[in-house]
Length: 355
Image 1: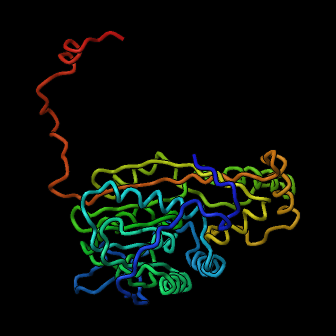
Image 2: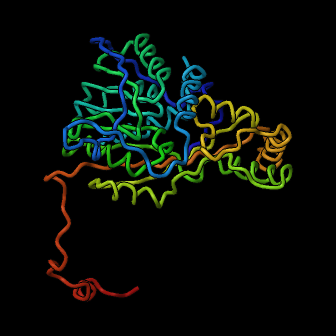
Image 3: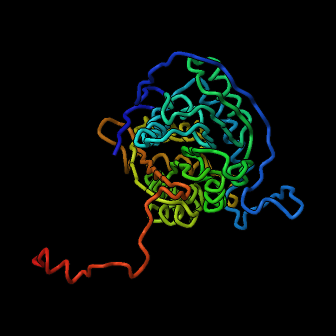
């Protein structure tokens, strides 16, 4: 478990090591968003798909991302940086390089800033639903000393990836995919976009995220309004992550979890942090009006139930890290069923069955 004893953006958890600039290349593109799975009709033209179940308002989420681009401009968020750093650490465990990488949604700026040559990336493609977020990342690169990676930017949607099949070596998503209406479909598209032996790295918020705020909101709504209104988004559970990777067809799936506890001066500071990350409520069935008395009651209950001795309030963020590869002949394969030459009974006799 990580503890971040600071307000967001005030103190950085990780120290960035500057690198020498070798070249400067970036472009900004606007793109239509299409699905790679079943996206070509008989005449070879792209056909746009749509999710069957709509949970999140994607247009509202784009607006949230636009706002977050301005609120987080020229600020480094210690929590976002910690998640991105932990995710990118996995590249150091890989012996191969990934010449072409595709980064979609979430904390684009943190990923670009913290890459530091890991993964042998030569070309980086960055995509977000928000034009303002893309522009913010591009402007940050112009001010950066590290322009060694050829970088392209375009606007697109994680639900309809505008990427050709088998076209990239690496896909990175840090704190972005949990806002998609069709998470399994998005992951299937990611797998199809990867070249054979390509790597998929993703970090999403898990179901235990903001458990303190969920409790405070529930109690405040019951006390002030006599019922419960959906104020926080549903999130995937840890047990679901492995199933998602397997369902998407990834080889060698891996899942691990971290919990980060961030301390704030008040519940209002927590809400401001969520706004700056673009992580506020985007449910389609949300109540669009928040009663002032309910909001004040939520803050009071939060403080009374969870405040620490130093006067701050904690907020838990559960982050699920997912790793998967596109199938390749070099990957270890399971033996066919019934091919074993030694039985468990023989093993028990050989090594002893004493408990």
